[in-house]
Amino acid sequence: MVQIGHGGLTEAVLAAIEAALVIHELIKVRVTGNDEMSASALAPEVEKSTRSSVAQVIGKTLVVYRGRKKDPVIILPQADGTPGKQVAKPAKTAKASKGQKPPKAAKPGKARGDGQSGKVSKFVKPSQFGKRGN
Image 1: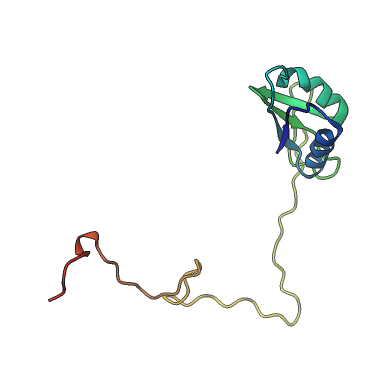
Image 2: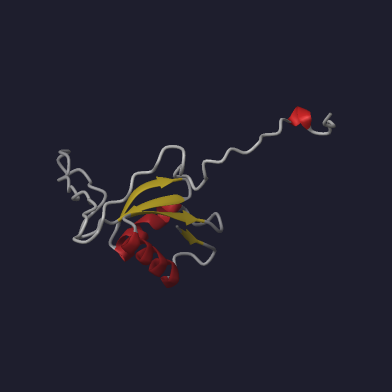
């Protein structure tokens, strides 16, 4: 999602990490550029600057996590090892309002649901290329 280049960990990079963490709880930050910068060396500064946690360092990639305050998608285990509190989101159901008719069921053989009509096209075998018809 975010790349740290030759310039290092600049304010613009930190702003990009912050913006990505607002949208996603878990992001990847790739450290490209010179060999002097390592992902493990930048991890503490990323954590401190973005108020997040580095979940894992894989080569030159940081996996950064910051849970949402409202409706978190990822539930981490508690410090004592017990599972975290699971937040179940209510399932969305389609409700028919007054005056609306329920959708019609598809007739067999008509529409296929994948955007194709029920027509069958002729398939030409590769062995038929170049042959003349009699």
